[in-house]
Length: 310
Image 1: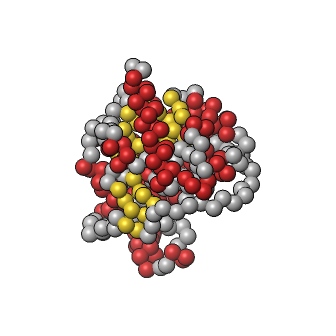
Image 2 (image 1 turned 90 degrees about the horizontal axis):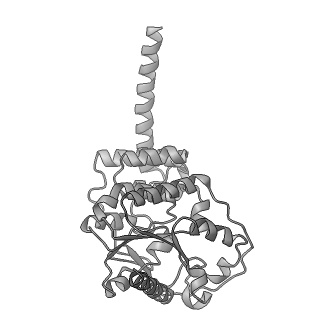
Image 3 (image 1 turned 90 degrees about the vertical axis):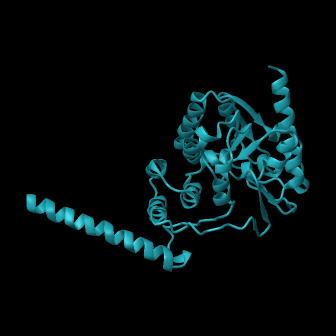
């Protein structure tokens, strides 16, 4: 029996070693089309690498923004600065509550925000969270929170990307990487906002649909709110505007409003603002700069109204 255990451990050791070597070589030499189960993209879409690196310069902000691309493309830090509101945008592409929880556990103690604006959207609550997980794994050093996130998602792409990312972290393989502030039509703005070169959405008919809440995401969302509450930080939930032609296709939007409204202060800006598909959006989900300015000024107005009511 002892001999069997020794052989098994010997086999396990060499299996793990060979797998690590294979994964590293596979990830470095083969094109993306040959590695569907590995998605390590440092400096990927959305400037997450630059956002997380810049985060070290911030502390004690007035507002911390959390959420998906609706957050980092929707809350312009310059507009809030002009109203003497110091903000940091910690949104990321397709960020779901599972990834938000990781970011909060890593950075909330340092940022120490006076308040939090948490962007919420039915699509992120319906997502498996894989896309946003690999984005965070590739663009920030990994820790125990990455491990817990990988186990929570239990997806081969996340496992492989995490192991591959851990190798890069251990050997500091990304230490000389620098991300351009301008990538295509996107320009990174200090504080985490990404400005898209002005363009206009041409709406197309979209099929009616229902969203289905992923219970894992809802549980992670509740954990986020509990974690924030423990720090005695007020949080406001915001459903950022999406193109009206997109918003109206959801048959059960009232259900999402009910779930969010029962948690804490909640604003659905698709109902508060009257925006135009072609004038204020660059695609079915995201505001162009004209829409961002209208949206942000309304957010600031509500913030000031809330302050005056205390």
